[in-house]
Length: 144
Image 1 (cartoon, helix red, strand yellow):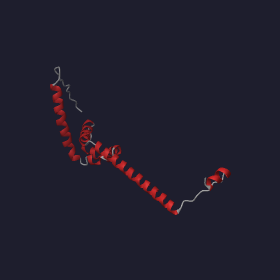
Image 2: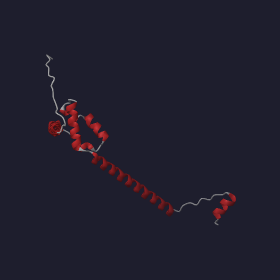
Image 3: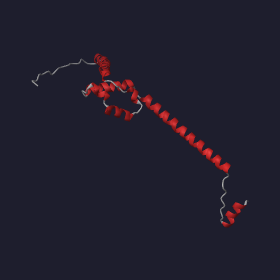
Image 4: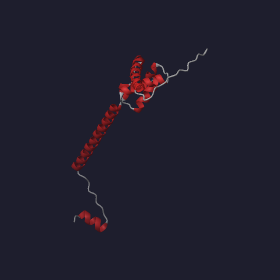
């Protein structure tokens, strides 16, 4: 039994030993290494998260969604360049910047591609119908 433990057990006196300069330097160095490792690990996790987000962006689907939004809601072609719409998409996934459309000139082409694709799908569905399909048209004119 050493003197410190005897003084502590017998008299309740606690003598705290000061770390040597070398011991303090080693502790400080180890803490620095652990901190650096933690920072590297956090950076690695952030990079993995960003890669996952980037891989989740489907450019073709985003283009189709733009075309559908513009056609269904009768929006102008420059809607794809609205800062508010782009900010919304970037808020959802900040890595989708490369997939955003920056020119309204590409919108007619996107709409035409979507039309051709959907036209063929509709043709196939109509041709594979189990029963005859009858179409009617309710046409009328108005002075307005």
